[in-house]
Amino acid sequence: MNYDTLQLDINGAIAIVTLNRPERMNTLGGSMKEDLHHVFTERIRNDESIRAVVIIGTGERAFCAGADIKERVSRALTLPAYHAGQKATHQLFSAIEAIEVPVIAAINGVALGGGLELALCADLRIAAEHAKLGLPEARLGALPAAGGTQRLPRMIGTALAKQLMFTCEHITAARALSIGLVNEVVPLTDLLPRALELANQISANAPLSIRFIKQAINQGMRVDLESGLEYERYAAAIVVSSEDRKEGMRAFVEKRTPQFQGV
Image 1 (cartoon, rainbow, N blue to C red):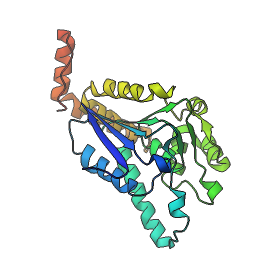
Image 2: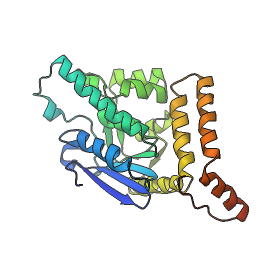
Image 3: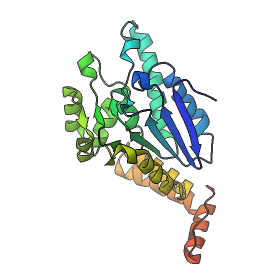
Image 4: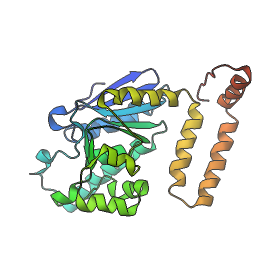
């Protein structure tokens, strides 16, 4: 299936999702939300050969500049209509966050508003040196409503998250690295190669292990420690009986590369 606003490329076990509205700074307008929903919930989720996903924007200016303000400026919504639409956005971003394979956001330019909120749904974030990140909604009389008020404080702490949202500051990639918002900062020319390098490192490991590590961390961040430990025990019990664990142990003893099948 071809998408109007995205490009999907499958490179071995890696899916590369490219946000492709460069003339509108890859904003979340047109059919992009619908296209993202389909690519993640229909294409990627149902392809067991995919072991990692990279999201990147087209061009050098923008990963995603958030909502398409030119589309929205003349749109009048009732409170119920907006609430229903935003629920769909929450469901989309939560589906991206919850997908069982690791997701890497390769931030190739500005990640603002909904664009940063999209990146927050990824497991890892790598930024190009020139990238700028921010949640400027209050400058437009709005607020970060695609999960930003909830995910950002959990990632960098309440005080810093409030500062970024209250001031609407666009921070540099270096600053984002210093506060733990991104994992790495690299030159633009190295961005996609580094993201693919990480994705390939991940995909070489046991898929079941990676899946349950992701689920255990995500679940544990939402509950108390004892409940998180209980989920960890549950996940470990499932993995310990897998064929991949047996293969991993045999490969270690035989001093060879394991051949994991995801079972």
